Image (cartoon, rainbow, N blue to C red; front, side):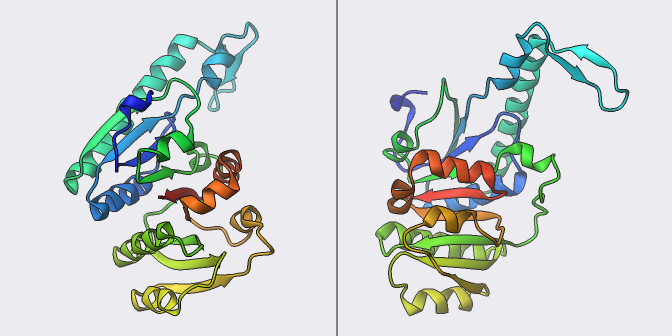
Length: 251
């Protein structure tokens, strides 16, 4: 991936090549429709399995039989490519249903949130795919919950509009709201009027990271770019990995 591949105004979805939940794809496509923009699907390079396969002692255990076999790098690469093609079809189907423009790219290394957000309107990090196969709470397609940090910025107000769109589509029914600045009364009343239950979360000082990690568990975390910049890119990605929530950063 190079900066030349980044167009202005799209929603960038960071896609784990091992897979992405269809409900989360639907959320990203819905937001793209509401923003009248397109989807930029960015497959995030994950060479860890292939690196393991290069080790002379690397084996895998077949769960059904208990048999051991040597990991084959070629087989893993084939699986990697198969997952990419399957995910492309899944995203394309969802985008076509809402007539949303779509393009894909594969990162050639670690992505930079700062670089992406210089060009994209929204950055969407689904929860890592492994969470859907290791006993973590799966997304069922039923209405979910959101944690949202409000700081009074223009990005906060854009986040507000996107959350209302998710409520209107019956994707979200609970909003856990934390404020880094005074939250206007109309924010609470409009969310409630849309049909959401709104819960206030107290921040201890400026420790937003702890708030985002803390109970309750939610399906989606929404932060304006002004807040994500304070949290820091590494910390935000750590929150994404440590929780069962997708993360949406809004510029």
